[in-house]
Amino acid sequence: GQQVMQIPQYQHVQEGEDFTTYCNSSTTLSNIQWYKQRPGGHPVFLIQLVKSGEVKKQKRLTFQFGEAKKNSSLHITATQTTDVGTYFCAAPGMDSSYKLIFGSGTRLLVRP
Amino acid sequence: ETGVTQTPRHLVMGMTNKKSLKCEQHLGHNAMYWYKQSAKKPLELMFVYNFKEQTENNSVPSRFSPECPNSSHLFLHLHTLQPEDSALYLCASSQGQGVGDTQYFGPGTRLTVL
Image 1: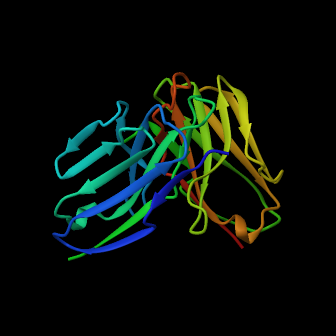
Image 2: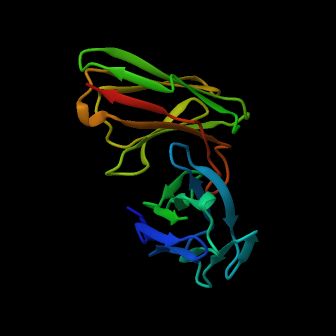
Image 3: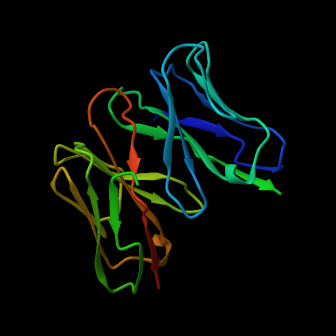
């Protein structure tokens, strides 16, 4: 079945350093979504990207959708301790239904 | 507050017990989901319901039994569980239409099987 591959699995950074997580698919995606799960919490929707090459920003977070719509990235500039958590990408399955396929997540740890 | 509630938040049960997890969504959505999240396999999709009809069962053992009496409520009935079933069980809901609905998660039930 379709998979959404996400790397890295873990990232440990010093506060103030940048962080990037990547999401890749072997098939073209109609859209891609990003979620954040704080420690002890539940996944919370951050953003959806739909257009080829789309770039969206939320404060220090920058989301990109690749030109071929097969990959996406989330970049955090100057991380803060509040950025700690696991970041998941998610995309529709090959059946193009309402359901999502979630990546395995990237767990971000920030040293103060 | 995402509009999706789950009870109980924590549950400890023996392998011979029978318990149920409850999920309720106040978002007017049509689709509801059960996920299992453990350290080894994050976000495993278990069951999907859309307009009260089960549309997906991801080879889940029969000791997990879902029930969706209406579009707002979803239950997961548990019986004769194994210790490896200990995990965070997350419920989510979405519109159930379109391509790749945004999903809204509840806070989860942390289950420990002794």
